[in-house]
View (cartoon, rainbow, N blue to C red):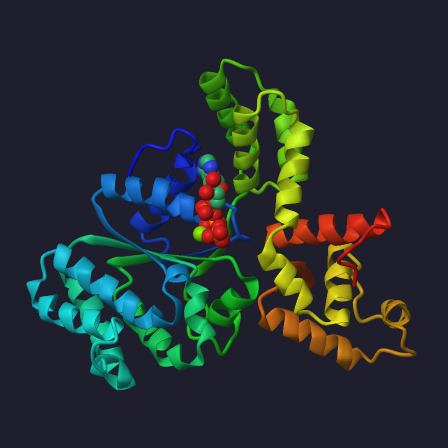
Length: 372
Ligand SMILES: Nc1ncnc2c1ncn2[C@@H]1O[C@H](COP(=O)(O)OP(=O)(O)OP(=O)(O)O)[C@@H](O)[C@H]1O
Ligand SMILES: [Mg+2]
């Protein structure tokens, strides 16, 4: 991979994680963070290089990009990994699976759930026999659990990883709290208590100092670290947003930080994806999203419900109606609930900013085109 000068290395975190695996203290970790907080970047640019350097064989796999073929694509990735590690017997199988993904023939391996499980177990067992340290980086793994048909496959994955946990270590990541809960924290979930849940640490001031240094080098101009840090905090510490902001400042030297921030938030506001989600939500769902952002904690209280009813122009609003709207928002992975705190939050920080800027601010300015 090309060296990315903008990447702020997170050596300490990567070392800590690998140390936990090396010492046997842990064999599986689940990293949770909202979207665009830097999970993939950490796996690919910190975790994988460090692990490789220390003699691990690493497979990175993202469930985000594979759509409904998740099972097949993941199995294929494992097979290619096994071949790379010197297991030629999987070559024949690889061709068959590729065909099945391309829709060339029926894909017997995957039509028969029993066979699917056997295949998965066999490959992973083979991998474990190779006498190498193996690290699987499974990005956005909760996507697997979206499809109820994958339940057996997930259960088989858990069993075989459990058997070989001394040799095969796993990092799972996910950006949907609801989805991850479906896989990892519900008592009936196949991975219940399998991995250790860790919140993905937010980037600190060192990240901002790093961006400032690179900016200064690239432009011979100066950027105020403290001001950039403040803007980073204002943008909920989303690294992707602050990177875009710095890029804008490089391209347009006359732009002030606040102007750049405003432009960025405006372009987010134009994001069609969010407009669609908004438009496909009911009035009550929109009001609830707004309430969640405004941190109105007691969503089910009589006061909140009376206020909501008033805004909707109806007399009363039953608890069950609010519950069902909340359930729908959760199911669509628009909101999540932090189990330990019992409060709801918007899953995607960019969508949250979008609501803040295109709905709430517009309303306050009396110019909303997208009001509830
Ligand atoms: N350590 C870092 N150094 C520099 N930039 C970073 C770093 N981590 C993240 N970023 C910036 O943030 C962007 C988003 O990061 P990344 O794609 O890793 O997030 P994610 O948590 O995997 O989000 P998603 O849910 O969208 O997959 C990156 O493309 C990069 O611009
Ligand atoms: Mg990612």
